[in-house]
Image 1 (cartoon, one colour):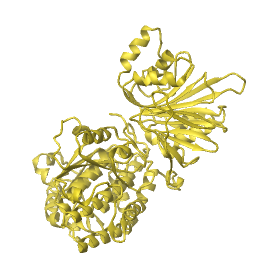
Image 2 (cartoon, helix red, strand yellow):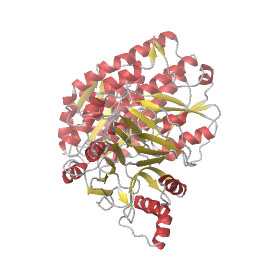
Image 3 (tube, one colour):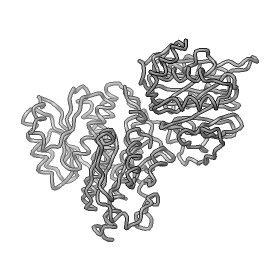
Image 4 (tube, one colour):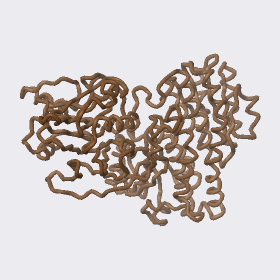
Length: 612
């Protein structure tokens, strides 16, 4: 949930750290800090500067890093888990004697018992965080050998972590280790780097290492060495990141979210074309034969947040195309209910970052029970991608805004392609139908552009209802799954209470919430369910609601049925979610802008949920 960076090289560290942190603000932004090692006067000193609030405060304090001298350092942007946002709770944290500085992403579950032990040993604490406990535990076990010390500490801590560590007695060195929290290391001619995510270091290098759990890295200006917990050297492969650095920049847009909304045609196209070859759907990452795919008896789609909503769309599409029963569940619920997985089942996990904590646990659960796991992720080398065995990589590129848009759209494409592939091997999708589906999918990018070109309609609606206290979204079938995503987007970035309901459930309670001028956004893109949804629109309007109807070109009776009509191009009903979600994203964006909120960094939220 937090962002960490580190650098060791020949250049001044503080500006590099602050620039890297600016690319990680989507991971945490209630406080920030840096620790820089300075030995310019002949004596090693670790200077720690921290600030509550946005990273801009820290930049101002340090003159964009220019006032802090030193070529080795670590930095952090925080999303609070232990202790309120404050300068004292901000990272980096120092050991009591100031000899060790530490940044941390994750949660130390047994920090209380460790803290009690250290207090009895005379240690004092300046913060309410679990991280300061680790800093003092490092001091407690320090033997003069950083590797020995780190190994002792990680054997005595439970939970998740990615650590970046400076030892005053070992100038010119940065140490890093991870367990169940993301960590990437970068190598360049100008120095070496650690970061929570690739965008933080793209400006400096595209050559990166993805390290496994409990592998310790020692970084110097000359290189990176890796060790296991027995202090034995280990080899870690170097990877080249293909992402364009422009993907991590705003490119003239006011916000990353708006840029990423408009990047959806590209994300959809690239995800499609990387898996369609000569009219065939090719998913080489799936290490399962056609016979194995044919024998799948049940599919479980497990995810969190927007990825879960994409999974719900996938449930409708896979069941319809392939005839395989599909259960779609929230990972945090699935992992704790002792699920009974049917034999010959496939578990599909969906995660943009590939680091989502609850989803990652499901991967291990499914593998331990002998089931095949297919991961849909956007980040090459992420934990879930490495552990799942079968991976479908989406090609959304770096997504910076906390509220997902283009990654969600790319996940939909992945699920469509998987559905078609499963339908083929089970004899339900013949060559003609496959060609039709692929042709319809190839048209989606241009159709998304058509919807984006009509953005003024949602901008107007947002200007009328940005002060609303309650907004409801309704739909049936795939439209219901999209309604859930629309409600989530509005909640996330405009802080308007929004709920989504299966339209047929209105009379079973939710209709009691309708008052005069309540905005109800109704999705009616599924032709066979259109009349049913129109009936539901009539019900809410008769009780005073202001109804916005979203349907397809040609369904112009929506003009008479609703107060405000929005249209999207037609496509195959299975693929309508890719078009109908766009107006809902725009509504949420413009409502947040109208309220003057920080669209890309909504309160209390972080991009990648790497802790429970």
